[in-house]
Image (cartoon, rainbow, N blue to C red; front, side, top):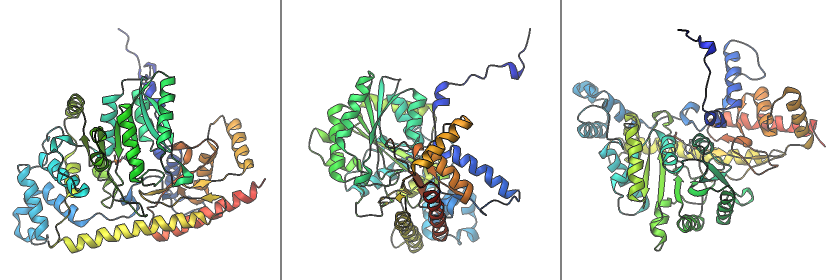
Length: 489
Ligand SMILES: Cc1ncc(COP(=O)(O)O)c(C=O)c1O
């Protein structure tokens, strides 16, 4: 009997895994990690530190967690602390009361599996939050499913609807690459609708109909429409009229609406956030029966607890058969992580006004919000002041997606470099790579999110602290000015 050595084993990989791409953690951040290791080893580079603007990870860029949430979480995780009066005396009374309430709901321990769709009491807290937010009746908590961040909800919903190339998903371009990656993993068909940069990155409903035609040409049927509102990477907030058009499209074409609303608290401009759920319910029959699944997460907003992996999806008007299968998919995963579930319940139930924690919570919450809004405005203003860069206002979310006008000679040089090195780096990826090598700033090239042919962009978060943001925009200015000069036509 011959045994193969590990070098003889065929390293089979599912080609769909190879095909899936995720630019937010791709080429540029990988190079950034190499440069960081060199800096840490004492090497001298043109910059002293890396500024990670590639991922919406607020606490990695010094955003502080909300104290109330962490205090409750620590008591829930270590209930024996509540047996020590001296320790209890150090926590505000509403923190202790909340921790005891949660512990009572979970029989005093957090280490057990929960219901497949999450703790019932957490789902009820979410249902009440949704009702307060939308001014509607509470949804049935059985239509809410807790997830490990919004990402795992996206995966489950796509698994439900995509069998293969005959099932189409409409996605916005520029898009958050989770979507194309998931479609690639399932072998589905994607149809891209373009957001209009000249109109505050608005969505035009006519473009959704064009997607039907492109899917039909490949024999695919549209199954799911993804709308990200507020948008990533584009930061736009949709108007109610546009949202109603989207709902009509979904209804008339028998397409499930997936409303990615993870940035619902990150609103800085003049357009308020409306949930798709509220818009659907407010429409006349038959449109108020349109199936819509909405996503939310503890990763963004003001709470910024990405690493807790909390989130949920809520199903509105989803047919019973689909709901049952989706719940079965949840049960295959046993349950989402418990810390994420507790954090999601906390996000949905902030401390009550008049309680001991309220003043501190308000102060922390308002401080983070004001700072994000200030940075969103400052970043767009600064970028617009750079020759060769234009940037729409950041109405929401955590990113700016400026357009870079790259001189033709720079684009031609990139092609030459690709030819000689046998690479296929897009011109804006080259720009982002060179920016990184010169300044230590880590952004994601627009090509990682897809964009209108012939345009170039980059995405940066608005998350660096204000002082760092100032030096970051100065460095981008100096870098772009040099490109404008060195590659002038
Ligand atoms: C639009 C959008 N949806 C979903 C997610 C996934 O977030 P999480 O899985 O951390 O909740 C992100 C993360 O950046 C995002 O930007």
